[in-house]
Image (tube, rainbow, N blue to C red; front, side, top):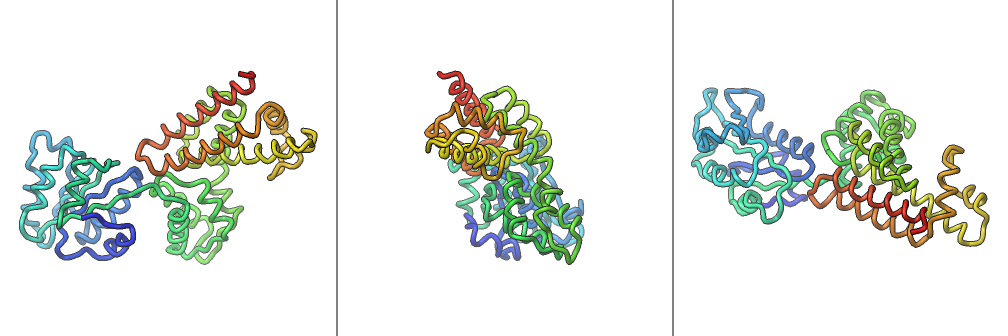
Length: 344
């Protein structure tokens, strides 16, 4: 059965007595693991107990395809319900999972983790159509959902957060729920129970390194240097910066540029247009933006911003690897900027 987003919270609080299992899937691997872990704690008293839990990988099924159903039919040595936990499931396991879910009785719970499954996926179709199995999709968090995760995680640690600090945290986190939650937990430890996280706290704990390497990517794009942008992006990915945060750094850069070019188009000298930048330019950025203001047209910058916003949406919704989506788009934009600088 397909679980709506509005029903998911209730399901994660108490499992229906007639539910035999759940398939948790989606592009946000951290969220998939988080939801699966929550379900495992509802299914059995101790998800780490090897006498109660059977963890199965797709590789282990090559020699024994019937193992899932056999594990579901096995009576727990300690009594109570048994958890059969399948990780990394694909369409090829659908028949085996369906057989396991049809094992009579309530002595087991079948928990399945999968990656992105398209609407036509055999595994997804089976889970959404099964009567006793919940299909739970884990999409990449949008800004509102990520803000809720931040507030929820800090509240659990008795830490409050200022509105501007939360907004900044949303802008630099994203992509993977588990990674984002881990970063917020670090912030909670830094602030301490009973404290309040300020914008300075968030910048110190979350923003400095992520913001710097993401801005390096944006500089490469703005300079029309795909090679420099690619090198910076590789560093950003290695440092664990979310693809959405990398895209947003370029969005911020081109929004600033758009404002300056618009002022320049009104007949204002370039130097005065640069002084109109918001936030104000650091002296080290002046030459870069002067070149862009003098050489790039307002229609081009508007098209680039449209493409960047579309890229952010694609990173969150298509199910394709967000890093690949981000890299392809940004390097393409950098190439277009290079052509514009060369007058082609």
